[in-house]
Amino acid sequence: MLQSVIEEADSVFATAQSEEVLLHAKARFLGKAGSVAALMARMREIPPADRPGFGQAVNAAKDRVEALLQHNLLRLRAEARNRDLAGPFVDLTLPGRRAEAGAVHPLRLVERKMLAVFSEMGFEVALGPEVETDFHNFTALNFPPDHPARDMQDTFLTTDGRLLRTHTSPVQIRTMLANEPPIRIAAPGAVYRCDTLDMTHSPNFRQVEGLVIDRAVTMADLKGTLLRFTRGLFEKDLEIRLRPSFFPFTEPSVEVDVQCVFCGGSGCRVCKHSGWIEILGAGMVDPAVLASVGLDAEVFGGFAFGIGVERVAMLFYGVDDIRHFYENDHRFLSQFA
Ligand SMILES: [Zn+2]
Image (cartoon, rainbow, N blue to C red; front, side):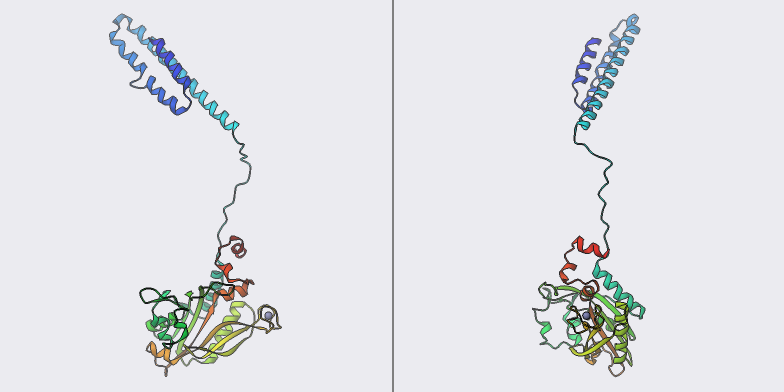
């Protein structure tokens, strides 16, 4: 009887092909309801005089079953190790793959640079929503009802009658409505226009807008601010020139050229041999805009200017295709890390 339990355990343990199966079989023989415990329970059937001998025999059988279990546990571990060694070779001394660290996007770098220059000049950063009303984006900025910029081909309209702002200028309106002059803000942000993506255009790009409103602000203040801004931005003593232009929200309006950052004004391919590069639009705030936010144009005046972040980033880094900024190509982006 004892021998048959030992032989059965030997046979069951020897055929186990995994530690899990083996430990399951262990319970069958050595567990509380196992074969060895059942043998021990038979003690009552044994005449009292034979009980010590029977007890010793059962304990010996239990020791034997435990030894068989241990033997097979070692057998299975040795087999598993041999399987690992026979498998594909893993060279643990090879260097690992390094996780690439991210970096600040070049557009953000340029925007931060612009805001740093604005900050030195005492401008505060102001933000506004990208989904705007027609009033903030057009009407208050003196766009006539029939202005071509309002055409659906230029502006993304939302189904609830609002629009994606086409410039950061609505932040001017929101700031003037919420604050008393003096006002001096820089407004960075994304803007949207129905343009087809090509080398120099994108339907979604970034601008930084500057606005100053105070008493007795003159065109000389505008030019001085622009000169200091462009010199701070490009970190060179470049000259600027103002050319007459037109924007609905400024009067007079100017296009601002900066001396070519590449050739210093002597003429090169980038500046098309003119020595100048157009970088921003500006002007004195139109009295109609002041009126739309309830400011008395006889008392207050100011100037505004807007600059494209992508355009400056292309000049800064010598990037010839705006699409590089949006494609998230790691090989491109890692150059700015
Ligand atoms: Zn040049």
